[in-house]
Image 1 (cartoon, rainbow, N blue to C red):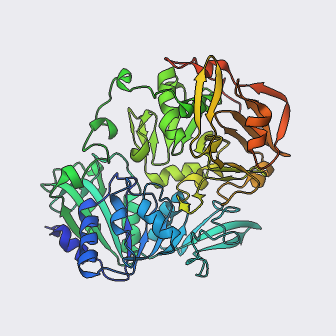
Image 2: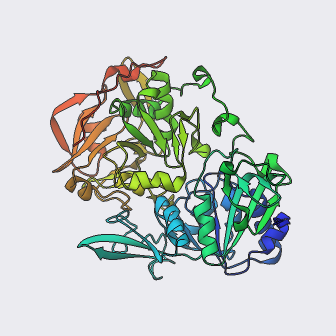
Image 3: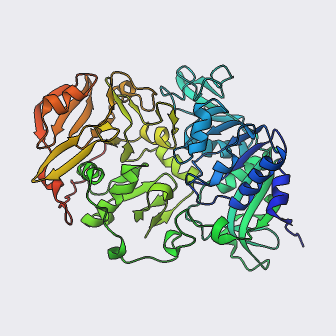
Length: 529
């Protein structure tokens, strides 16, 4: 009978040779192979090996201290090709200081690139990324001075007289995956993982190039005792299996807890057990954003205010079952965890693969997406990927916004220390933020305003004091909060002059209710053309 090759985490680390391309599969700390990643770090610190690695990853994979943060050592990784580093301070620092070659690609394109590579293609074509900093005519996804003179890893191609991005193959030498159980043959399940991710496509991509697949598991069971439908990766594709010796620390379901069955769909918790978000400027902004919801809308939530607030507000307002909230990880419905546990949720209705979710976002396009706001430019362009030297990266932002039918950006009007008071149905600015977010030209082109205006995308920008929309002529101011002075607290705080709507309105006073629900009423379902 076929037998899996069981090895220690230290032995697994020794399988990674200098100059290899390593591809770990995880999101935040969900499914991170901590035992192996820690041993890789220990080996490099002690011996200087493995070194000169290329690190390829679709999602951000850290909680600010673990995950691929273990690989953030100068010299250990020569090149990083990823999508998001917002929860990876050491990587952001290394990228900013040009201590590593750094390419940023859209998260969904990397996840789907694995599938393209797995089936023998030289890369992947897509319209996602055109006109943004990923476009080689803009920045080519090159995130620092060290990377700028290097060859592009994306091209522009033409097919049927239309332009497409072409994401080039990145051959994988070692793929790191994680599972719950495996049997003695190596057949692997992910039943207790909080996401499905793109595990099998990444595994098959590695096998296409003769790469090695190493799996970390929690437990080994007898061959034949696993339901075949529960097998995520057949054992014939796994070269080595590491059984985690300290699962409480190194095989956690997510950063904040070891295991909660409600996050992998094994149980449901009473709706009343899910606590409402406390009232603050973030909840106020998200409340105004939810006024755009309608019955039957399929919704996406990005990181930050959207994921942390919108789902909880919908649960509090009792409308969760009248819309369908999704997250890029592949989850449908329920109430989302936020912050360092982004991408998972309780009381879900469905969970699909990460790469499959991106098929929907890239193709049909979600009805409404809520995304965070870094900078808004005069032409309606948005930067949410690079603030000063802080390179957070694109994540799924570009995949989702370029094809969404409606985009609602949620963020504070200024940044850097602003303080607010919400009382008596009005907003008072106690202290103004130090950083202007309404700028003539954004520092990085994450969302192309002119392209969105040309194709007629509906776009709103919601802040605590003002609401804007994109129109054919540019950025139009359509609402301000009660208590806010239009000239001194909005227009004078912007680096450009917006179009002020002749029908400028005040935000609804019910948004200021601090105790309990505010009375969200969904719009009627819109007729699609």
